[in-house]
Image: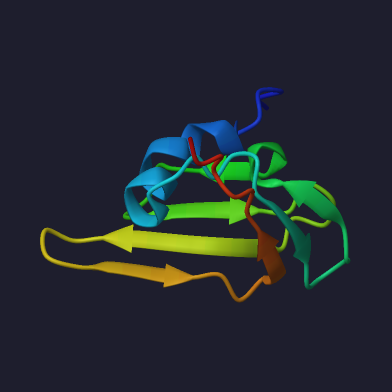
Length: 92
């Protein structure tokens, strides 16, 4: 029996999410549709070992977001999030 979790924190998904959204998404916040917990995406549990990436709620373990990339396409399912709120980059 392993006491080591089989997930990483949401920061491990930063590169994939930035390639999709064009900005650092680790400080974007959201609310879980399953348990209504609010968190920043850096706090989610990231599973990266499969054919895609899965972010799960740290409170109830519901799937929040799935992202799969092929050589020509990306698929995003964020149906487990009631909303995502992103900070607007400061314009200089």
